[in-house]
Length: 129
Image (cartoon, rainbow, N blue to C red; front, side, top):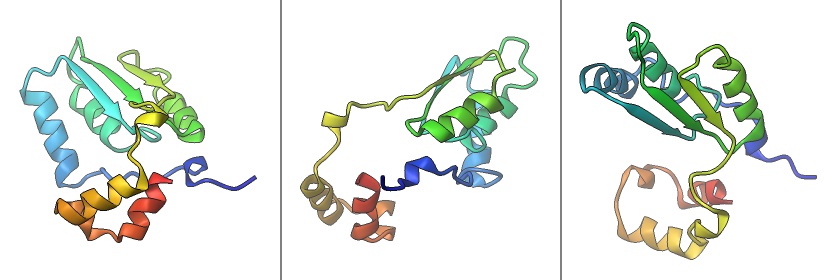
């Protein structure tokens, strides 16, 4: 059995940085009613930013968290088991047959310049796999 990176917990990529604070600001000052956090991981990044933003709210918005990795999902559930407005789900936001093919990813990578181009195409294809 091969060991997948999906089996590993990850260090949060969004934590106490500019994007983290932008999420908090948006959540606090824009009358957010519901949050959908796709790829919530263990909930220590963007999920935590939202939870923190709503901590003073007597009726906080619901935060729906999706995480496909079973170990990350289990940690996410554990982290928010006492937070009634956080709902955790262990599935992907799209079906497996809706994922792009490697050829489609390569074509996008070559024709559409985004921050994704800061990473090698080999690494992007590794993520797809």
